[in-house]
Image 1 (cartoon, helix red, strand yellow):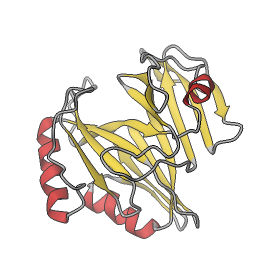
Image 2: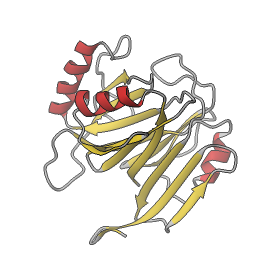
Image 3: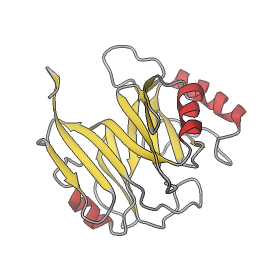
Image 4: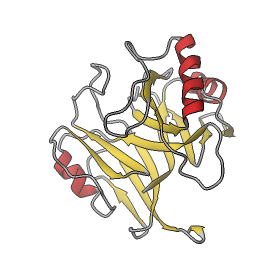
Length: 223
């Protein structure tokens, strides 16, 4: 499953645009009064203005050289999370760092092998997006039209998806690592592509989650 596009909300649109475009060095693809879009490698990331303060977790993938570059840059800015050392992820087996963006979201950069045939500079894509929920079994059932490679062993935290992209399911109220800030539901719209799923739209009946699924055709790209 590849994450193609994510739309999130923010109460500080101008600060977020400056951070993601100027600090994170992501190309500005759209710039309007109430939203903007940046390119995170093969993923498009849009922030729209909101009066309600949201709270998100997402992760970006990159190579080792760019990982160290961003670590030094974010460290100088003082936005790395406390005690952040750029340690190796025990699950993904690559270096990882966590930082706050201007909204206070917990964002992550994960060092991973290049997933593309052509050389890529900077961030490759967005590989994780958090979807907090009060009942992870129900959330997993909601996502069941999509393929999932990870067993559901924990009632408070689990991954759903595959090595190319995952939904991070955290029980509402559980702290997002590596902080004590509790996860809560904020509006998320995600477009994903998978070889093993039909095209469909998933609207959660009680949570503000909208997931569009496209069929990934390797020879021709995306339908």
